[in-house]
Length: 132
Image 1 (tube, rainbow, N blue to C red):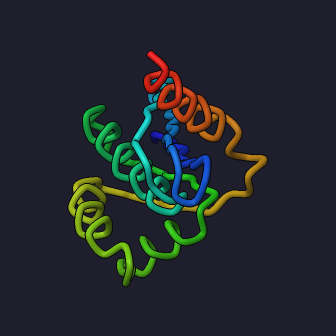
Image 2: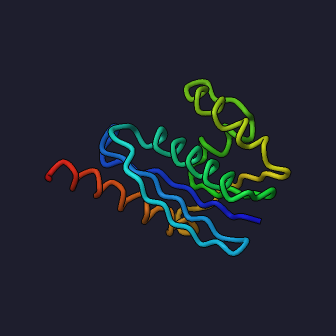
């Protein structure tokens, strides 16, 4: 089973944003830290979800458990619906349905430190690119 920890962070609302993904299991330990431009925190969280799902799919796992500290992401995926984030749900569901078993679980911030750190590092990448 792959455990995929995701987080999005924004410096402002909206503001410079980044995503962090930490994947472990099945012999993998992958850390992804990517700037995603200017957006609000919830949008960054959904970007992290999509990127994490795509990475899990590339690894060929049939059993995936996503962990997120974003209640809106978790509840939207559980309901398979989100009014304001419908296009993210439309992109996520086919990825989710490609796995034999998929779980998503809300976790408190203190259990998502690796993904949070990666997301915050990505914000700094955004800031440093503007200075160059």
